[in-house]
Image (tube, rainbow, N blue to C red):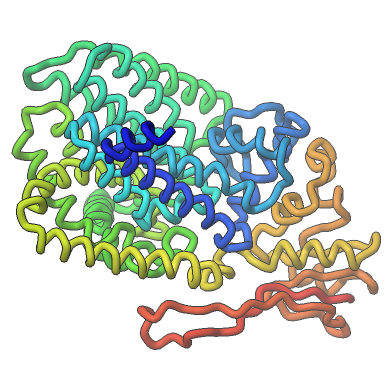
Length: 525
């Protein structure tokens, strides 16, 4: 045993890699306990549909084993995350932490894939470890791996495709690795909306990277069949459900208002540039606290010079297929997000960028490491800057963001619905339509039988949604769950209020440090 330990200590890299991986795993998994306690309606929809599939083989609408899930009036739920989550709901109770667990695991898998891709690019353990740490500590991934949005499965699938392509170029069995990249790209099509456009662009980038210049790799064509099969399945499903896959995009598209071509072009260029600005990437990020913490940008400022060096290195090594693919992927990746208007800049739709930024990071670390090993003072200064910035961000992520973002995650709404259901004792509970999709919160928290939900809707749990007129006409004794925007009907008695004390980061000048916020209230008519 002692000899084995001594042998291990003489080989520091296994210890360094295991330590870095263990640290990232501890950070990502432990943060599930400090993530916002509420579930946004998209997360609740993912969770209930996964539970319904696991326990009844149907979704909330009674459809057996669907390819796409209908939620909130359109097919906005994507299958990969739901089917990954479903088996967990057979073993564990349906809670916010369980619903978010696949996201944390996908985040860790993405870090591993990024490290493997960096190894094939650089053949350097140091570059691999630094790339893994850059991915694992990035604010973009930190939030994606703490929320049950399908986006994380998209980003992981694209990162796996990148890893397969770097392995195809670096080693043997090229055809198998190219085929693996095609499988990952095909899976990505069913993870989130942007890959439906972006995967086609990624295939173009792949063909240009490996066929345009010597050394040409005809085996790269092995990536095409899996992608072709995925697109065929998508088109067949879309033909059977006309307009289902484009309904939401039609509302969000830069062409949604039928503006002239010049206006549409200006919108696209403006949006595209927005996603490449230092403001979005490094200093401010996405203003939506479900997508970003409100503390800094989507990436650490200290990674900016590494990414820039990586881009320069790729341009200098343009004749190398992987470098060519990294640049083309980085250029193409903001396009799907730039085609939409609502919420710009939108970190979830732009998450196609992250795998390619990590590729540039690997090239950047490869360029920077020789300089840092020669100039230890510079290395120490950079290390200190990274430590301070990372420490500040992760402190905010653990200690401040959960409370600051409660209202953004519909916190209090589910608790109020459960409390109202208990108080009602058989009476009707009216859920105000000004709440955020209250029906799915009721399904998630009360877990009614899926076939009964498909037949009776909210009546399966003794509830119904109500507008202002319905609230006024409620029968005496009915229980009302209202949002802060609602005015209770005359004569109603307040039973309970769901409130929370929200804290704001010191970087938001002009706002109070703490503020009491009303989330929902329960009344008896």
